[in-house]
Image (cartoon, rainbow, N blue to C red; front, side):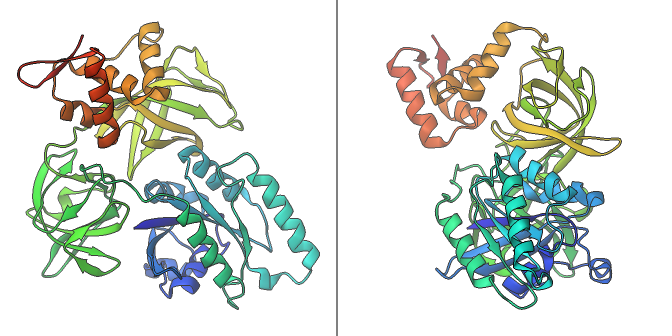
Length: 434
């Protein structure tokens, strides 16, 4: 199952468009309906013409609710980028586009909405040309632009077919055998108890599974599963999933926690990352700067340690070590966003390179910088060797989990390293670097 997420400036018609496409109003809060403005994440779903059902995450567009937007946008397969024809590109259009770019969202469709409010065809052409220029050099550079009116229904069928075509080119999320569900919503229902929702990544969950909520380490059992309000015995990677958990109170869970199988993940308070600072940021990122980190559904304060550079200039990238105020669950290659706390603004983002660095290393340690470079761009063999160096004697399964590689790729790389004599197989089946 695949999930798309909206993005775009406030009042450009994201929620109205979703309602028209699905028949579901994603603005579930009375305050949202009264103000006609999304505040929290909204959810909907519908079937494509080919019969495939997809989920939709509708995010708020107002600048005051960017941080709510970030808690839901990270797990999507494609973006539905919405720009109103009567206003064109606006400030949050640009900020949301920068976020999609930093997260490297792999696919997208652009909806030019509210065309019924524009009477001059020349204006529509000008707005679309400006929009195309804005998208140049971003992940949405080649995304189709579809003119639509949620009010009249014009262009909706074309938009749905464009979404289907884009998703058909994008592979479904793999089952890595280690499920994790970043929690973006928690609530209770009489007679059911605690329910959490999120986009399931990297594995399957089934009714009866023992689960653990991280970072607290509290265990419970799955009492029930729902996908798009349909009860399921099993939830698959990529699906929007509601999990009814027994043995855990709703007040023991927070947005940003992660639901996993017990013992499969370890929380961390220190991560090494590759980070890009946006080119329009006013000043460089300095050593010991405080930032807000957004990863998965989590939001956490962090202190920056620059590695190999004196400062990170706008438009440049570098390795950083982030010292986190609270523990999170992260894997290598997870994407993240960083924001300046005050005045609040999105300033950059990137990907996790090492979610469990062995120590706080010296800033100009060339050997460590070389290791990070291998972890960032190296082959599966490079990555497995770096993991083996850090873990010491350990099983291939432990190395695979720590490396963040897909199981098949890692197993093949492990066999190759053993055959080359770069990994030694001990009598107890553990592996060690030669």
